[in-house]
Image 1 (cartoon, rainbow, N blue to C red):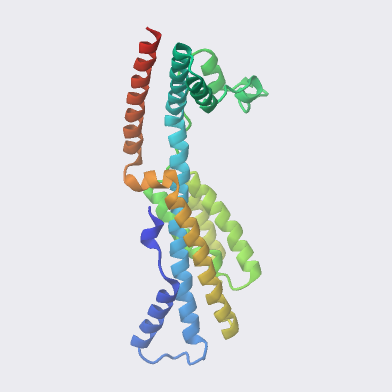
Image 2: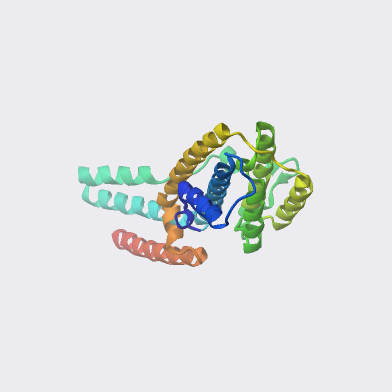
Length: 286
């Protein structure tokens, strides 16, 4: 999901809310701050929608980055190693100082092999080697880490929960703290793609929110609230732009509906490059 597509101007939403009120005819609530409250509610909802879009995209970028590293990391490493071997073979043949320098630079690009402690960090516990470590030592296939990509249902429940429990809807600091702690749990369940946990949290929020009736705010607080919402939107816009301009974000924008197919395409390209370099190395060794 591209947060740019859901980016909404807060003031525009506030103005729209005020126009809607005007079309609705005379209002029973004649308080001076009534219209301002409506503008704040419209701005709050606009910010929540934008924040949901940004958070959704952040999770997608994070998960795709993990899958990209798991699937393509070894291929990139192999390409770096082949580049170093080719450069070293050329330097050995020509003895040219410039070729020797290039070979040293290429070798410096190759990530060093991890030490024993680093290699087995997190793979040894009180019961000995983990299944992954044992598989490596016995040359059995290693099960890849489970992928995490929230389902459509998880996304639906997540968005609904954030709309209802968002801290921006709090009327005091204590309520904001409670909502913030709850949203942390919601974000964790969503990042893990855990539908059951999200449903449990939805039930918990429904039970918790029964009987809650936030009171009105003074006009001065409402004006300050609008200013804070505008500042928050600017911050989120910067986060969204950073995500969109990242390498992984750009890749996701290329195939938002089928990122797995994009991984397959990149893998095929990398395999072709590996084959070309292996042929070049064999030619230099011949």
